[in-house]
Length: 70
Ligand SMILES: [Zn+2]
Image (cartoon, rainbow, N blue to C red; front, side):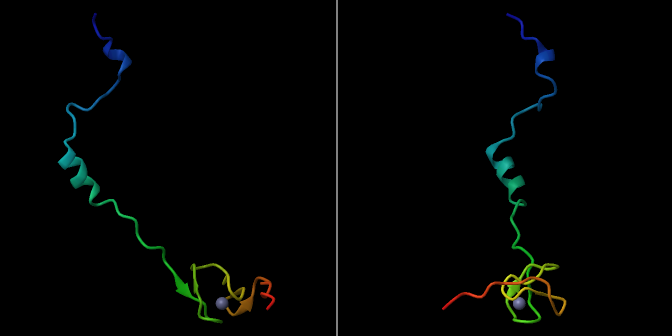
């Protein structure tokens, strides 16, 4: 039986070895997310977003944060 080459399309000439694959993937790393500190309360927050702890953004209260009842 003859294989129909048109069914498969473009394929790599040869298999990538385990070592070559692993060496390529050494450059694939997750980086830590960028964070800043809130100017109002000093909490660690995502940049360009209102603080999740106090609701302040650029010195103004942008969000109403419900206080925990104690
Ligand atoms: Zn804050």
